[in-house]
Each structure stands twice: as C-alpha cells, then as structure tokens.
Length: 223
DNA sequence: GCAAGGATATCG
DNA sequence: GATATCCTTGCA
Figure 1 (tube, rainbow, N blue to C red):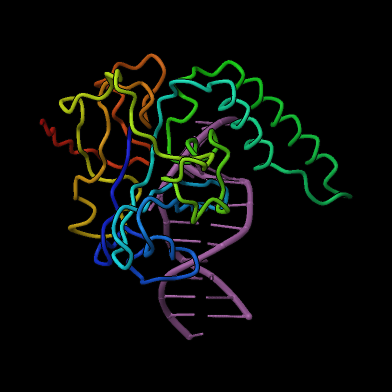
Figure 2 (figure 1 turned 45 degrees about the horizontal axis):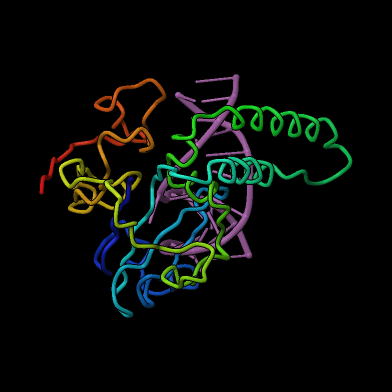
C-alpha cells in the first residue's frame, strides 16, 4: 500500500548513485529480484529491483496491508524484536540483560494485541513482519517456488483503484538535495490504515504524516 | 525529543 | 584506519 521509487545512477537518494558496491550490487542486476539492506544498524528494508540489468532502480516497499497470514506476521515481528535486542556479553551486564529481557517481554505483549493493520506499516516493519534480512538480497521474487514472491492478483480481486493513489516526496532523504528531495516518488493508498506514519484512530486525511519528520507536499494524481 | 546500533561511504 | 551518517522505530 506504500512504496518509493529509486531510479538511476543520478538519483542522489538512491544507494545506487555511488555506483555498484558490495551492498547495492543487486540494484544493478536483473529486475524482479530482492534487495534487502540494513538501515540505522538495526532495521531491514525490502526493495524490488525494477529495471533491466545495468540500469539501477528499485522500489522500496514501505508498508503492507495484511490480507492473510496475520498470525505468522505477528510471530515474525515478535521474533525480530527479540533478535534485535539479543542478549550479549555475560558478566557485568547482568542487570542490563535483565532489563533487555523485560523489554522483549513488554514488546511481545504489545505485539500480541497490535492491530493487524499496523503489523507492517513502515519499511522496517515490512521486513520484520516477513522475517527478512540481508540474506534475502538476490532472491528472485518472480520465482513461484520462492517463499517470498510477487503474484498476480486473483481475477476477482477488487483492490486498489487508481484514484486512491497519491504521490509525495520520499521520506528520510533530506541529504540528497534538489531536485531529488522534492521528486514525488513515494506512492501510497491514501485511505489505507496500513500506510506508514498513520496512527491508530487517526483519520485517513490525518494519517499521511510520514515517519522521520519530513514534510509532505502531496501531489494528488488521478488516473 | 531522542537513544539504540552496525554497516557503509568518505575522508584523512 | 577513523568517523559521520544512514531510505527507522518506539520509548522517554
């Protein structure tokens, strides 16, 4: 229900703008392949490569509305939370360890009752809800045998109408400079409660406040 | 409002 | 080799 486009070598907001590296190499490969990176040292983000090999471009999946598998997503969020606060070093950290365990237990209780619409309502939450990390980079998402894959909608699917899609600038790329910070390359379904930044109980119009404190100048695109 | 936290790009 | 920064989240 929410994505961002990162397109070409010129795009200063894209990991690819520095040329191919060990991290971003998948972006330079064939389309339909996953690129999962670690951000802020603790969160993973899922991208889908979208252009031909040699032309780096990808779509960052920023939010997902669960249609099924809610229990599995909840379990994956809980597992990811525990892994993120893994207990380390023994000795003088005894008190710290106890606090971490308490924090994991508190997060688990919170996730057990979290509204399903909020299980993947942000880029790092998407990766956590699907149990993804960097090892998924390079996976062919068009392979029907892949556990994570892109499928065509069912014939009777009556989901996204084009009129519901709005475009805004991308989130968290202030350092990229113009014109990239202003390019309206974030696309979302405006009335979906699962978009990032939305708060429980907030109405759709107020739910467009993005994470990261970036301003939104929304450009409504119809058709 | 900001801490958490590790890889990465970039600078010396 | 050192370090500022990063396509974020959830808590204080």
